[in-house]
Length: 462
Image (tube, rainbow, N blue to C red; front, side, top):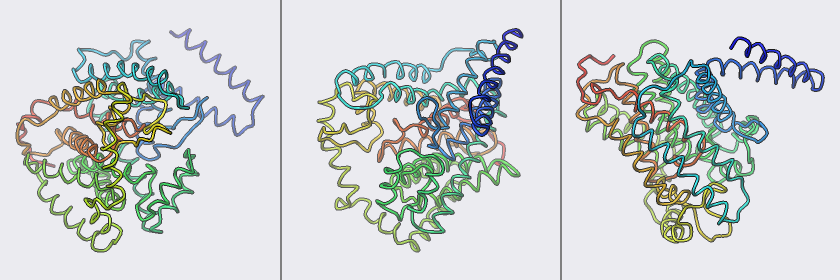
């Protein structure tokens, strides 16, 4: 092994020396920095995972070109897997025990997705790199397997949650700050341009369509609302049960997240988070009733003083609302989608297929059918049910403390994300956000102890 390390060092030195003779000093230092980061991550993959979580929460779609253009978040995730592979090769990481049924279902879902991948390429004539898109989706979903490999102790899980909250805080400070300064989403476009976001024309169309909704690095306001529905329960329960700076970090993200959720005016995310709050109250979680009151007061104040929020909430269930009308039309046309594409449309393009005369679908589970067919949905449902059986509380949760905060926060966040699936589809195939979704799904799975689920804890909340 020492001889292998020596040969790698020699080859690396020759590579960097050759680059120094052929590229500019600026590019050479950039390559050197990338090499140093890569080596550090391969030697300790958790470093790469922490960087991935921070970047995914802060600047999810900042891009970098590595042969093909991809996001920095996904590049870091791929590098983390390279580190895990190296550690497995050297025997420093070993997967012990039997796979959980939910993990086996995830493996089956990824394996089955090869069928709609091939069917889409053969049966649907569209321009798009189906294989590249499938690899990216698989890479994002694979976070579900990284948690038991890398986060084997409470300290490691704490560090990942802190990295996520730090990235979320940076994202919220940037987004809410810009919004309060200008009240115009279009002023955020130069920020995303400087962050190397792809498809600037699409970004401009999204922000111009309704400039009164808060812009963020997640681009679409509904996507912003969706990630905040996942983030707020994690942030509050983590912060409430910690002390010092960790407590301040969690509470700050929870408060700013609530403001950002209302400023993004994501109706589905607001409803989903409200339903989760009532579920927590039903489970008798401490502070849940108080949180419902606080949320109602904050929401009332913002609605009273922010007319765009008034208008959007008042139009929530009106069929005359353009967004609502489109959603009804999507459901009306969906049987034709299922008839035309029984195995789904695959990965070459996102719904709808150009020129098909059909629409996409704003529903998580129906979008799974759209992409990978009814068999794919059945596997996805089995995966979700197996996860739920393993993590759900078996009784009242009478105590919120350090021991159960990560489990209950992750469970509540994932539940809120699933409920947003009734109104939108981003937690099915939208890259980066699904990686964070499955991160916390796995976190809940591996912190769901019998004492937490059965409500045996008697320790007072911190």
